[in-house]
Image (cartoon, rainbow, N blue to C red; front, side):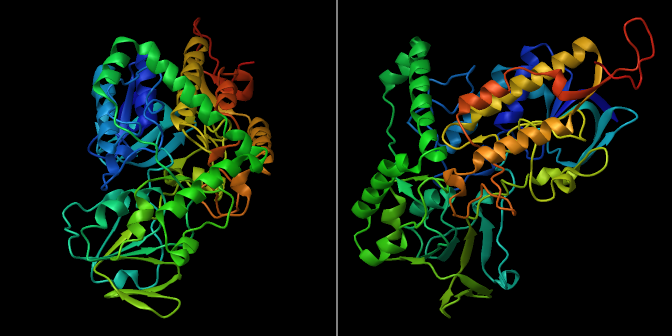
Length: 498
């Protein structure tokens, strides 16, 4: 078995950021375990037509690696993937990558004080394990009676089948979330018939996207401070939304009026417009930014289906009203297991797996550490995703927190860190108390919520507040165990560091 000091699971934004920061601080004894054949995480996996980011490009980069070359307000999938490749090269992390090394099982070995990690190719041991798998790593597929008997083609939007020609096919899209609203306008003109199965209509806002002029990009390259000013301005503009999301929903009314005006201007048919009008408070579910989705739904070859799916037949879909629609291709646009962190089933701490410990409702101290799982850190863990801003900002703050923890362990020869249960419980109780009364718990069904109806995905407040909470690693929040011998050779095994 190969031993390393730190093992990172995942080579998306958070895993690469962690790797870069480790190198920045002179820590070279680490590996990045990635199940795919390339880096990028969600930006490697999701290659569906029209795939793009819905966070402005000025915010969608590492703070230490701004990109002046973004070609538009919102970057495309290809541009984001290219950015991550450039960062991997610039900051020298490629030698640490272990591609096609899917983590199958990881177990904490108490006596040895390390993690034993079994991958699809090799077994490793590591003093510290960092899970950087992200909330959008595992596609969620619906359970529909008869789906296994369907004779046509079926795939998830996160695993787009580029070998399949959709021209003149009868296509069913199940779901109307962010991914669906991006690829539907791309495939609608080429399919013979498009059925969009909608459970709940999303609030759709105008996408204020534009191409950046060459002179803008040249200006950003020559004067980086200008790009930082733009980044800061957009950050505070988005932070201002938090008051409406968490304190007073009436502050969201202007956004709702804009969305209604957008819908009215793009959908003239009163019946169709009614079917596309949400009945929940704006912001309860993820907002959609699109100028092309609603017009695509109005086209002659497209039908919006609002009746629930009853069953799939070998040649189509039957809805609860008894209608049977003939279909060749089914595309699942049903999102991800964001609230469940599937890797949790494979991480085993002192007494149980992380999934067993959570029992359907994830929680962690600062979204980063879980009691009973020593030397394990989560990036973009429970309640860390920003509901109004770029989650890269909270993720970077977590990475800096973990680096501080590792430096503390090295300085004081600490073998294990295990967050105190009372510290974790107090933090989680505070987060859930602050979550009450927010728009995210106002009655809609969203991927933010777990089986118990708890919002275990979002941070209920300002992004800056979270960043302040993780600004400094406090060893008092943890139970600490020293390494077996101190600098003078004295045996300190099993002794606590006070």
